[in-house]
Image (cartoon, rainbow, N blue to C red; front, side, top):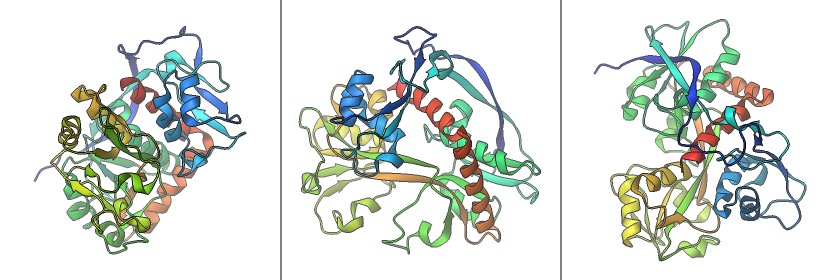
Length: 364
């Protein structure tokens, strides 16, 4: 098998997104910091500042570390970071110029040398995992840009490369296990405390969480299901595509699958799940927020399908990984963690996330 090796080396601004129409003047700032007031909830804040209560998930996504696992528990006095979405919110401290917020950058790709060069750290990813990695996305996607920034901060004296192999099944075996390449991203970390024998837990070394995303229950507006307590989902038929992680259905004592508390349907892909939901043959679809909303948009189901009221099903963390068979696995992951800590401290991490979130949400 032949692989095409390319590496993202730089980014250039190529223009404005034509589909985004700001509702404020271009000179006005957008997004910024909001101090929670007594009586606030995420939906109240979203309705007030985004004019759309359903954008509570956008606020939650940007502030998972502050809010924790229960989005209903936000304390007065806490300062939340609000992304700029379609020109809103306005008038907050720390906002960005709307014109800069929607500017699109594109990756510059150049040929990469031999992955066997030990003076070069070779990272591995693939296309078609929007909004995280894809060469057609700005700067190769949100996660790719974070990795590039983190590695740039800790590898000034030696080069690193980001390689693209779209056969994701080959990443662990043989590419990482044989040290053909050094690390891969982005990968979800299972609940290794519950089941340390799973392949990923037994064979991979994980970086610190580089991004966290909400795994939500999507429901049919004509027959809505909510998820405010564990009992709400019992007896329901849930769709999740074949090959997608299901560990969170059974962790923390849930045992939804293990004890037959839900019926799981697993078609080939996300589109099939949402078509079944729209047709009423399943009660809900469990999907990360970004993939779910993008498929709803692609299928034109915005008026039929939406996020269920209540809590997320899970919060998945995305990581850079190395294989334990790599002789420098621990050292490589330590390097990534150092770079991640550096861009968090400098503010570069938040800048990158906010810019991508602005573009992502504007498309939904």
